[in-house]
Length: 372
Ligand code: CO8
Image (cartoon, rainbow, N blue to C red; front, side, top):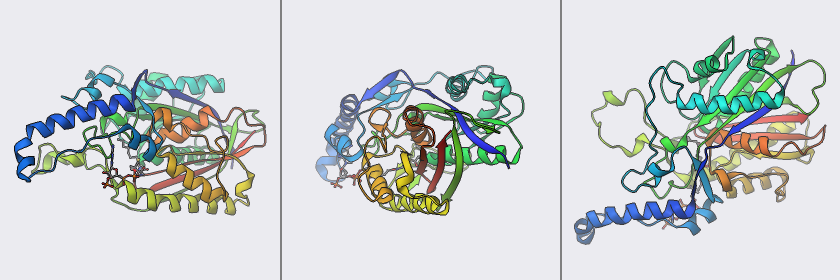
């Protein structure tokens, strides 16, 4: 078995930003208009008015202050409430491949590698913009990588599942270097007209280069161990898919976008993740106090605070458990990788940490790493 390390990471961050204030103003304008349109039914008691959203609620419930998006004007337009993305010809690079190539090039540059030294690409994300050919194969071609590529989807846990898949292949010798990318255009499957979730997501793409290491690779992060867990739940669900046209009901359907029972998710996922992390550490002969840092999935600040407390047995400091969701919101699978990419360089050789994701499925992944 070979040893494997993360030698580079990269982030593509969309330029456009939506603040909570802008988001709430747009949603409330939409909700007011809908209430005016249905004023008669509302007055007759046959319809509930749409409730207003608030900046205070969003910050208190989630810790989110703003999010990056691929297209701001479409999302904020009360007549549209979704991004406007230009359709692309089949001969053009797809939008997911485009942002993945940007993040991948940054990861390669950080590792001091060229695409020619990579053997495989995994595109791990919550949704892929088409069924086939795989986005990963398009990214592979755009970067000029020989070898193989495939797409995978484990919702918010896609990145840690992608890391385990890549690490296992490198350990076994089926590849020497693998690029794993997480293009998350969540704005396309977010329901911006639902106040319960309109604030949750943002767009981004992350990339992780993993390589076989035979000796020392100073600065790289050796992957010591990975562990994944899944448990079926309908509490986070999106029913869109290729069988849609076979169903009788073809009109607007709420379940074609992201839906969740947020409170149930919170209550059920926090213990599941803490148990996964504590069990994983124990089986590797480690104590929580051996960790210099935890790079958690970025869904909700309160959720991360609870998980950190359960794992460490005390409140984690901001250095021990950095959050990026105040600036990025929930970027699905990319969140823990943004945190890792932005907040790992300061740690000295020998430091150990855990990259941890959790989300729909339910699914959760834990990756124990050590600075080389
Ligand atoms: N403004 C004002 N009030 C609001 C708003 C709002 N925007 N939204 C809800 N309220 C109200 C509610 O109606 C409720 O009112 P009442 O008490 O009268 O019923 C009250 O505020 C409290 O609402 P909640 O109980 O819903 O509030 P919570 O404190 O539970 O916070 C959260 C809601 C933030 C959603 C929280 O429950 C949470 O974070 N849960 C975990 C969510 C999570 O981690 N989900 C993971 C999903 S991500 C994933 O797996 C990837 C999926 C694929 C990506 C999809 C991309 C689009």
